[in-house]
Image (cartoon, rainbow, N blue to C red; front, side, top):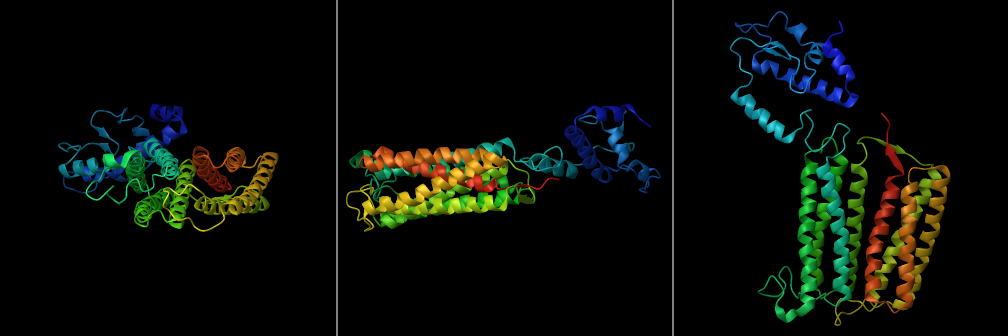
Length: 402
């Protein structure tokens, strides 16, 4: 029989209707603990089986808080005389559950489609921005000769956590870079903790957030060795490469948090996929040679630092070759993706734009005697180029349609 309850459910949007039905199912699970469906003697009520059929609660609970029920009625039928709607133990359990779950029984920080909540998304974006920013501040330390502005670690100088007036501006710049690592670590932990609450639904995001936290923590230790070893050029290069990797991993988190969980399938032709990976390899070679070039250049972080021994002029030319190859491959990706309207087309265009700006800055700095500001911009653009390439690669696949 069609009742007003059925009609009200039919008028709801599909997602809201599903939430109402899900809430009703949870209410049914609490019936036995509240004494419904039993007689005073404790025996099963003869109508229990009929009353616990899944169709009836859907009709009985059309509203948000049981709206539409007659006085004394519950999702399982009429409340037994003298029965309380809650008990001390059930109230405590419900309160603990409600603090970690949404009204629909899901973890609080994930929606019905398996996507993280707004809070998780905001924290993840802040984490990404901080990891890009610390590359800029680290570049400032190096380009201003402030690498040993704080001569010790984790304190700035022996006996003082903060820079002393004698250190001047170099101490302030170096300590400012160290200070930024604090918020960066805090947000990495926050993202991991919130993602841990949805780990069963989004194991991919939990793994990525754990990797980010591990890399951020390792960077703090490596930074200490960089100071203790007086800015060893090779170790400084490793320090920068790990920062780039963190930016790429946080970018991967951003991509995956906007996509449904579950199995994924290839969204592009196999030749396009191969071309994208070849482009990624060319990008990686470009970054590696660029790190060696910077290590051989004049910006060491301190005048007393011994360079890595390579010829900077020769490395500058070697650095350009894979860069131009990456540009040609990226142009091919963009043309192909736009022609066939492939899934990564928008981010392929974004990658091309960033790469063109990066190459332009690189040519300018090489012909202008490596001005510090241009070198710093080049370092930050390298991280954004790597992040854009990461997004393109992740867009090669899509969630399997259900």
